[in-house]
View 1: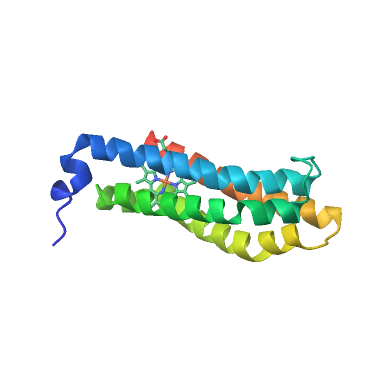
View 2: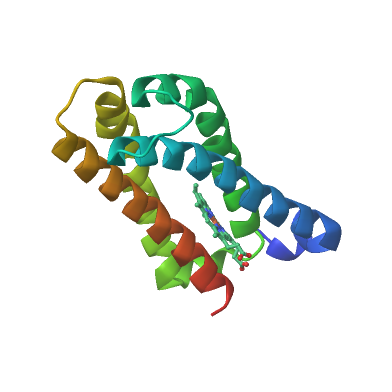
Length: 145
Ligand code: HEM
């Protein structure tokens, strides 16, 4: 039977804090890179680069950011799994995260790299921004409730 009181992060307060910090930094890196592409798709000039070039330049960085954010998220989750699992906003965040990841690696990458009309590029960028913002605000929301 899993006993959360023996969890490394619960025994060492500094480890809990450090993991939270890495969670926030890594999600900022991942979403920051994705947002650059979204701004370009919306029509803003980002570093004089095309969306395809931005996508290629940031692909590894955003993937690493996502992997670290998800790993540290589950590490913090494991410090109090019953409470987190029963929190509706946590479930909502995880469901939205799944949708955002599928959207990002199917439609978003394809539109960023392809030659699509401006209207499609704008819709895809808006959906992407909405999904990631929803995830961030869900995370902040259950941290304070
Ligand atoms: C890229 C994906 C993710 C984003 C953008 C994200 C976003 C956030 C944000 C903004 C916070 C609030 C930080 C604060 O104000 O203290 C947070 C905290 C947290 N996240 Fe995530 N998260 C992600 C993935 C995950 C995953 C996969 C899990 C695992 C279940 C998770 C579990 C948690 C937990 C347990 C907390 C701490 C809540 C508390 O303070 O009690 N996150 N996340």
